[in-house]
Length: 250
Image (cartoon, rainbow, N blue to C red; front, side):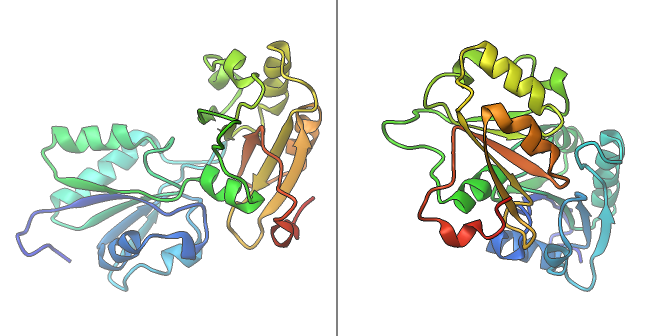
């Protein structure tokens, strides 16, 4: 499918946390119209099923600690298909602007003078908090929200641990399972109480979603029990009224 004006267009879009009904209408339309869909490994089959019959689906990896294509290879695929005049959809899990390397890929398109657009998606922090019946921000509790990521302990070295350890602080920690003990140690070193609530949400929004309420003291053990992608919500516990959402609690 080529646009009427023959100008190739690249769309960067967020597939949301996993469930197809979390995909926005704009992203669903982009999936239906794209010639080529370059998608993250974590984008599920029910989302990819929204692609049109003409679409070439190519998995490009990007899963924490799993095999993936080099960023240069992914960028090269985007540029190559776009230069052929094809409509390209770069589909990222969650939101493309939240730890999605969006800037690296758009910079390459700007250098090549290839037009693009960005369609937002629901990020894992929002889906995980919704599963708890919680608000990420709340008057009188926290005036800021921090989104933190790192593939290993070294990735967290520049975090403001003193701020994260303050009473009432709320943070969503992406890709933090393997560094759970390091996170625990840094937070307690900076004064966070061992009883600070922490909730891990595995496979947020998917049928296999699991909610694991914990505390800072039990964080490493809770993280070790999870095998799928998870977000750690520091400072939040499931609300008592969200009982219907806690069927998968472990």
